[in-house]
Image (cartoon, rainbow, N blue to C red; front, side, top):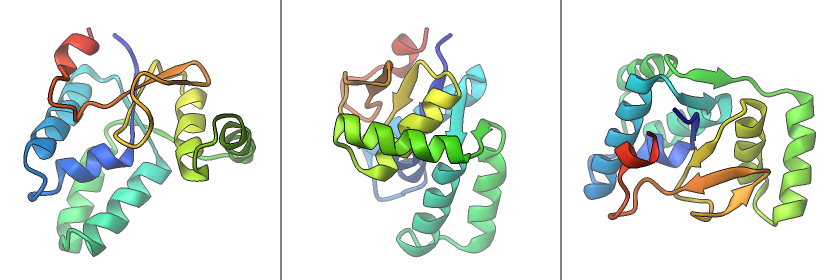
Length: 146
């Protein structure tokens, strides 16, 4: 089973009642990774989710706190100064935003095989890690994670 780093946009869509099919796909992705115990997130992902849930999705703090507790069942990557330096290198090498580079650096630190993200380019490899957009209509989470 391949280890999957889950980007914050997947978590946000899973909690966005107005996201339609993207919410369905995001919930399917998070649930599958949770059941398979192959999902990995970083502190950055938890922070971005909490901020967007509170401010853009207008979720109540108890709801956000409950979701954060559920997400803590994933392996969580804790940032380090080395990861920040690596993020700068990845940003420069691939010409992505610092925050996207930070996602890749966290995935690299956790030895992930995949980054599940809508933001980075599907099919692209960053630091040897493949990016997949699980929100695409043609994407089958069950097939890719086997």
